[in-house]
Image 1: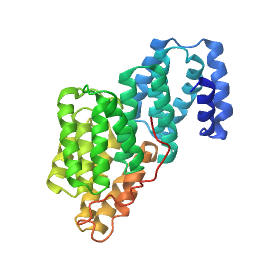
Image 2 (image 1 turned 45 degrees about the vertical axis):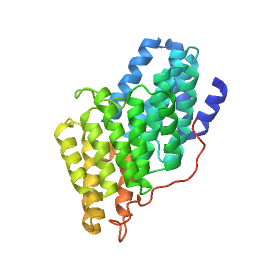
Image 3 (image 1 turned 60 degrees about the vertical axis):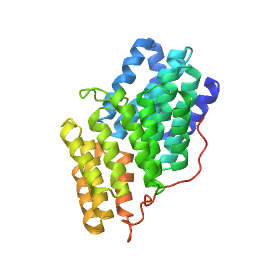
Image 4 (image 1 turned 180 degrees about the vertical axis):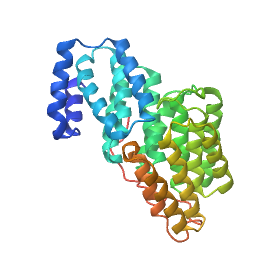
Length: 318
């Protein structure tokens, strides 16, 4: 895919309300002098850190502005790799899974254009865990995960994300044995590539974040002991500043309550947790998790498939 076609796809999913501002920002940035590759690399690293604490709407505006400028510098493999990671983060700020997938596919294309194996694996793994954790578009999540795992056997954060995505896809389809097996595979990789406790970034998976992935997995499966243990670990290790991720754990607790038979109590617990988080700190993911709790129905403790998970075929990731 050439740069012009790539930009055409991107333009199709950017709101017309902000198009003028973005174009103006792009021209102003060019007139002021384009950033060097090292500066872009640091900006993207900062976006990874900001993602953990900044609300989706605020971050999306900043990302969109930089992407307009960045696309004018896609002349080296390094810049394609930087663009790929930026596009993947942008996908996480969008309003729904279908829109996110369009950005993830664009990120995959940019990653492949870069030729950088680590970036190719990471982008696919990140897209996979994003969708699977949300219980959304499970077939597409599976495709991203399988592609990431097939690209390289070397342990990496991208491979870890892909394996955890496999676990969540299996849970969403009611495959308990498959979910537990994939979780065990992911934990073996995690033991080799875990990020430091102090590293707070969307590109990192320190112990508290791994515990968050596993908390949601076992809440979906209805395995209370494993879920409780993961939630306690996440709360114990997570930096106090990450209020949004504390809310994730509270929603997991609400889901476990609902799946254990106390649907009304679980829904009330989850709604209270969401209401306590300032609106500018919320994300698409939290909204989807809350709706999952609200959709739990009678007999859910015997039916381990994720309520409301969409398994609609979408454009296949490569």
